[in-house]
Picture 1 (cartoon, rainbow, N blue to C red):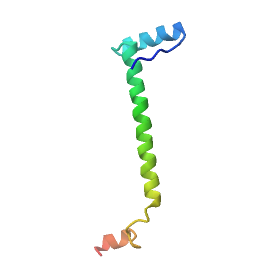
Picture 2 (spheres, rainbow, N blue to C red):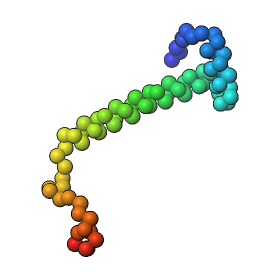
Picture 3 (cartoon, one colour):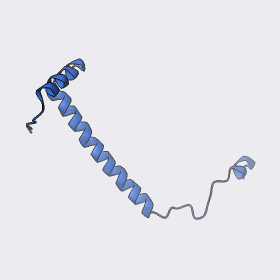
Picture 4 (cartoon, rainbow, N blue to C red):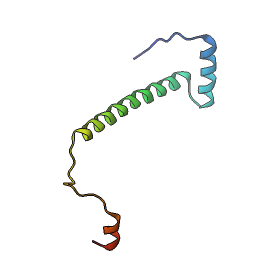
Length: 75
């Protein structure tokens, strides 16, 4: 897919220099950033779904709680 962006010429020149310093073209740097942005959105959505799922799950401990003293005694 091709996208046309309108940005200030000075910004484009500075971004091109920054991309060149990273060994990339400006096009590749923008593509990489968009892919990272898209991946972050997907990750945040998956984390949100996981947190919602855990909030709805009652758990399976059936009253069990961690007891450090019992662990030390070998109980």
